Length: 171
Figure 1 (cartoon, rainbow, N blue to C red):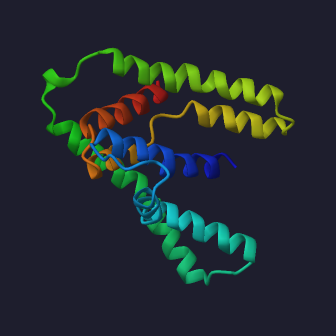
Figure 2: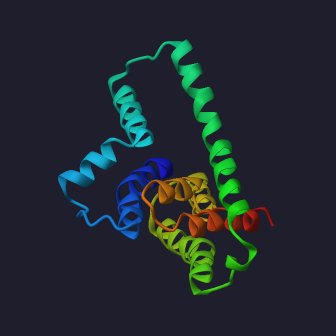
């Protein structure tokens, strides 16, 4: 459930905001935005997966196994991309500024507090509440750096935030 909501928000509102940061002036609810959302392979895979789940269509094992292996490479490859971006940024560009602080406050304070409040009022099982809370404390999604580069937004900052919040989570 969390993954579904997170996927929908990232590939709609999230990528819209990244595109807007990159200078794209299309509206959120426009044909151009819809085309960009529907052309995103992860979002399309998500929609196809939902369709297959609800229709009960079984995917042959060889296709399922192959797609699973490809999916398993996505995050490591994203981290290699982000590492290459961070390596190319001069050390003087790494500054502790208000944007950096706001990302950390949002990811590690505001998001968990909002999720805690939602979980307190939602009549859902304890394990689901714990999972939602844990997921709300996770680092910035690796896709943020890649999509920022794709849409010519501030991909250096996005990549730095992915790496920084990932390191903070490990600590």
